[in-house]
Amino acid sequence: MIEKLDHIGIAVKDIDSTLKFYSEALGLKCTHVEEVSGQHVKIAFLPVGGVNLELLQSTDPEGAVAKFIEKKGEGIQHIAFKVENIEMAMQALKEKGVEFIDAIPRKGAHGSKIAFLHPRSAHGVLIELVEK
Ligand code: ZN
Image (cartoon, rainbow, N blue to C red):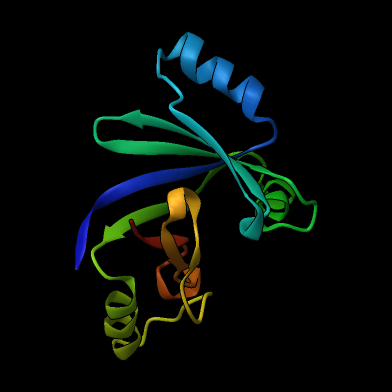
């Protein structure tokens, strides 16, 4: 069902100043920046070894990323697994008693379909499924 680790979502206050660290200090390259209005975030992607770092900056003080930073500060917010068919993966997980934040998939970056598992079903980790 799960094909690979797709990306690691990192909540940041400011993408531009964060990119300075990742590019100038670590030498990673940002390949794409996108605003996903449905999620109230601006996202920057930095590929490394077949996985992306996904820097998330909130565009809405009421958004999930803003609330995360308010509570915990900047840092790793979620991990995302790539699946071939998100509806089938969700169905299979629901049958195993896994709870989801999203009842149905929503639109993610790059026109992908995404859904978040509830952290209480995943030992405290916010897990995203993504179908591209
Ligand atoms: Zn993500």
